[in-house]
Amino acid sequence: MHTNTLLHPLSLRRAEPADLPGVLTLLADTAEWLHTQGVRQWPRGGFGAERIEPLIEERVLFLLDDELRYLDPDESAPPVATIALDDHADAEFWTPADDPGAALYIHKLAVARPWSGSGLGDALLDWACTAAFSAGLPWLRLDCAKANPRLQGYYRDRGFRHVRTVDLPHRSSGALFQRQSEDVPITVFRDLTLAELISA
Image (tube, rainbow, N blue to C red; front, side, top):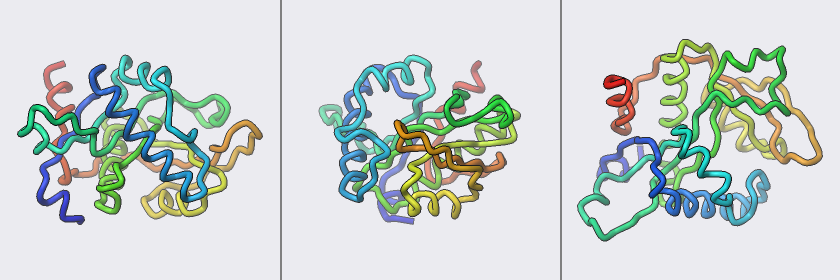
């Protein structure tokens, strides 16, 4: 595990409207890095606010924070990582034969470049897998760039199985993956969303 996660306590929470600028910055930085790697899954420059605001409003966008940033109230540091998790199956990819309602779906998974290689992406995938399990759903699913074998290999190495690749000319994504849900212990960060579930 990267030393960042040992020296900096991390916590996961739902994104709030005030988090929008930080999320857009993180996604833009990630999109630019992807472009330098030759990956065209996300638009260069990131996503417009109109794509991210609905995720915040629906309360399906989650942020991983470095808790030490709260020691400096003047610092508006962007989140360490972000992930959206919902039950919105992309109809262009997932068909009725896939039983779209049997899964939760990952979108907008991004880790800030200074935290790259620290295992946070793995931990968020495990957290999402546990969320699907807790919801009584058998699958965790995602789609990723159909022309990025390195990213596809990353997901395979983390327990995802390639379902198929949907090749649509207007979509750079289309490699479909799923992983069986399970209860995975998370030790890398504190899950502040658990308090919401307990109080609900």
